[in-house]
Every structure is written in C-alpha cells, then in structure tokens.
Length: 248
Image (cartoon, rainbow, N blue to C red; front, side, top):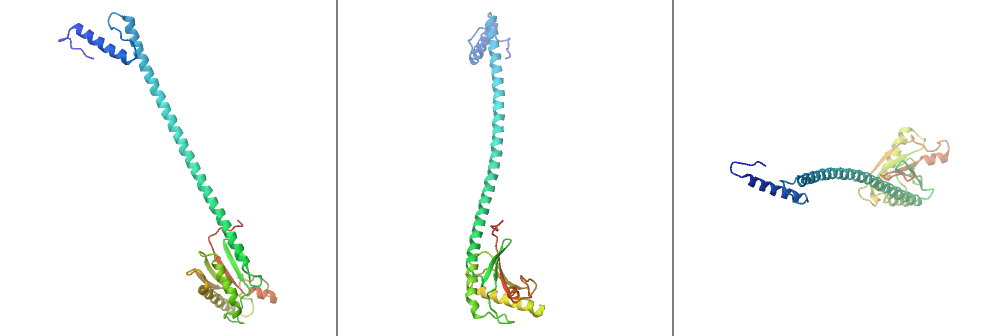
C-alpha cells in the first residue's frame, strides 16, 4: 500500500494501518492488535499470518495430491471397465458358440433319425453336413428317377428344412463300370435331376441348390465287388452351413 504524505497526516496513516491490521487479524482468526507500541502483539500477528499462509500452502498441496489420487483411481476404474468389458464380450461369444454347437448337434441328430440305413447315412465334413443317399433308384444308365424313389426324395426335402439358411450342393457319383466320360456325364445328369426335384419340393423357397457330377473319381468302396459298386453309385447332398461343428 502506497501512502501519499502530501495530503495526509501521520495520524491518518497510523489509523489506516491500524484498520488494515485489524482486518488482517480478523481474516486470520486472530485477536486484533495495535500496530504501534506493542511489538509482541505485532509479532504475533505476523506469526499468525505466516501460519495461515503455511496452512493454505499445505492445503493446496494436499488438494493437488488428492486430485492426483482421484485421477489415478479413475484410470484404474477405466482400465477395469475395459478388462471387464472384454471379459463380458468373450463370455458372450463363448455362450453363442456353445449355443450354436448345441443347436447344430440337435439338428444333426434329428437328421440322422430321419433315414433308414438302406436309404442313406448322415456324415460330417468340417462344418458341412453330408447326406449320402444310396437308396435312390435310377434306370440302368439313365438319369430318370424311378417312382419308388419318391418317398426318399420327400424325406430329403423335409430334411433340408432343418437348415433354411444353408447352401445345398447335390453331387453325383458312379461306379467304375463303363467309360470315365460316360460315367461323368451320367453322374452329372443324375445330380441335376435330384437337384431339380428337391428345388421343386423343398419347404424353403429360394434356397440355393446346385449340382455337380464326379463320375467314378471319388469312390468310397472297392469297385471289385457288387456291394462296393452299389455303394459308389450314390448321390451326396452337401449341406453347407455356418454352424460350428459340435465335435470341435
């Protein structure tokens, strides 16, 4: 505080100093003291003011420390949330996988129960399901389905309704009798005939169904016996699904 002595008396200056000292003492929670003539009281006022300033600095440091602690706790909470969130996501994915496996296992078991041994067998190829039909009847050297095959084809159409989102591929196979060229042509025509019939009867309109012939190239038994050749003359229906193999 600057004091202009040109227009103020010494007494005025002392009175103002007294007033300032009183306000300082009151703000510091100390007893007001005169600033002139009482050195111990003035010293006490100074010490009290210094103590107040020290407490303020200490409180400021403590507040800064608490803020750092709060920030550290917030960082830990954020990290825990991220970890817990990741764990929750992993758990949800695991539950979905288990549910998918259970659903796939139930579909597979139901599909197996639909066919007698002399009609066909249900197999797995990775995530695909293979319906291997050995009970279909064609004329010798012909792709014409015989009438007695109708009940089995109806079963096939019903079976495919278990997999409404699947892509269906009908594969034709023959034994090794005759020329390879003729067998390839015959297997292709038979596969196409079955695919067309399934497409007409299937309960899921628009379900993708294609066909392909392999001739004698993929035997599953020996062509040296009548039983082996009968097994090789087959139609494989590949059901391509996105389900997880329940065995894995």
